[in-house]
Image (cartoon, rainbow, N blue to C red; front, side, top):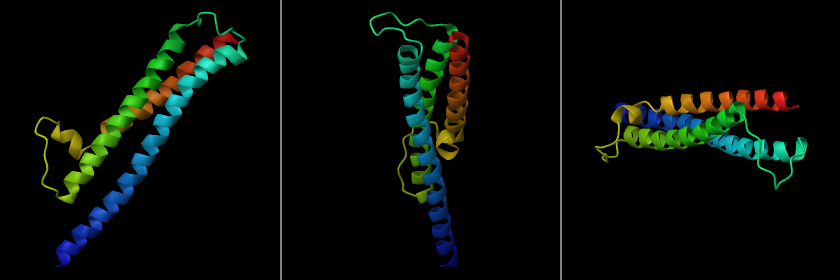
Length: 133
């Protein structure tokens, strides 16, 4: 009985901790989507490029867009694998044999990739903005 209670407490702790990471990933996904919109707004409002004109792009701006899109994708993947991790930890007897079990048991790689992509996108956008000003 003591073991069952300890396992239940451990799951409750895992659930709370994973919830914090899932919320954090949601925040990065929202920030990445906002950064995509901000980059276009920056070109129109700050640099004064008319809305009818074709957006002048450079490799840094395109890299930032790809990075922010990647951060969105990795953030969504992390949220999925984090939910699958909690499902696995709960002991619910459900499996999807085609899914990579290692990622279900260790959902941190998409989270790390999301962070790298977000900050790399920010750096690339900053370089592009500084070069245009």
